[in-house]
Each structure stands twice: as structure tokens, then as C-alpha cells.
Image (cartoon, rainbow, N blue to C red; front, side, top):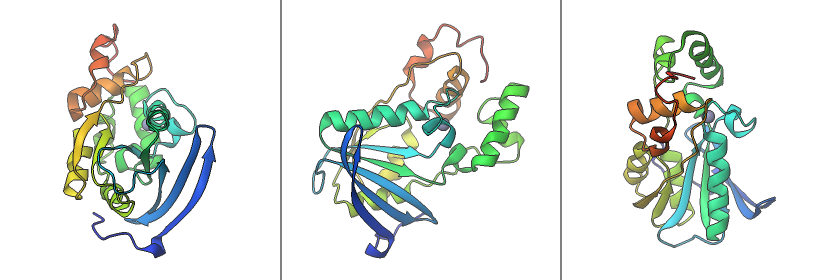
Amino acid sequence: MYEQALSQDDVAESELVTRRGRFRAVAFRAGGYEHMALVHGDPVGTDRVLVRIHSECLTGDLFGALRCECGEQLSAALDAIVREGSGVLVYLRGHEGRGIGLVAKVRTHVLQDEEGLDTLDSATTLGLPVDIRDYSPAAAVLRYLGVRSVRLMSNNPDKIAALESGGLPVVARVPLLVPANDHNIGYLTAKRDRLGHDLPQVGLFPQHCTRAAE
Ligand SMILES: [Zn+2]
């Protein structure tokens, strides 16, 4: 857990113009990793700031993998922040495979593809934890940025609890639902049924009973 306030020594900021628009890129070190907050508009000192805390997923975020919904969530969250005119996306490193790392994550993919295990059992079969992500760097940077309270774009109740224990009131949760498809349905089903994520779109997918794991 990273509970200290961020110091200037661990932060660097610049303007960042993207194809979506203008952001402030706030790079920061916390908890042994370098992360980035993308700030749009001016949420400093304001309440009910629209926020996404996004866990790094190289395969989904960069390469557009369909086996998880990370890339589409990242894109939808940035779109929503720009639409709103203000908000913060915190991109947390060290969160590959819910914290087990990139090589281990790809090993779980092998077990999912070859053995039909789901996203949880494929980790535990390798002797790895299901979720060891630390969200405290997100709370630290949001405090640093002067955000007073948050509307959090997430389907994951753990993130709300983590932010609140880090001193950031979460006044609302905004669903961030990616449609189910043949490739992600096993993953989404496991997250809904075994990790307690609020994913109502899973129940609408016609094949969700027949595809145990992806
Ligand atoms: Zn992913």
C-alpha cells in the first residue's frame, strides 16, 4: 500500500495533445512503479470528478485483444471524460493479469485455451494469486491533483473500497460495460460470477451457457 502523499520529486507533468483532445499528462512514481494520470479540463478542487482507474493490460490496451475488455474500456473511459469536458484517467502499471505480471498472464492464457480453465482457475493452477492489485497509487495521485470526490467508472466494487480507504469519497459508480462477444464471454462470466463485478450485459449474451472459458 502506498499511503504517503506524492512528492514533487516523484511527479512530472506536461501537456499532452491526443487525437481525442488536450490532456495534462501527470507521470508519477508510487509503490515501485511509474504510472500516469491523464487529466482533462480542470478538476482541481472539485467534487464528483469523473474518474477511471485503469489497470495496465498490454495485450488489451495496446494490441486490442478481444479476450478481455480492457482496451475497449480504456477507450470508452477516455471518450466519456472528453465528452464530459473534465475528468481523470489513472493508468496503473504493475497490474498485468490482476498483478501477476505479463509472462504469468500469458501462461494463464495457455491454460485457458488448452484446458478450458477460467481466468481465476488458470491463475491458481499456476500457484498464483487471483488479484493482488494495489490501487493506493491512484488514491495518492487523485489527492495530489486536488480531486475532492469521485464518480468512478468501474464495474468492480474493490476499486470503490480501495479509493475510499485511500481517502477519496466515491459518490457514484458509473458502469463501463463492454458488449459480450464470443471471445470475452468466458472472461466476463468469471468476473461476474466469481469476482463480484456488476456486468449485466453478460446475461444478455445468448451463448453464455455454452462457453465455459475463453
Ligand atoms: Zn485485459
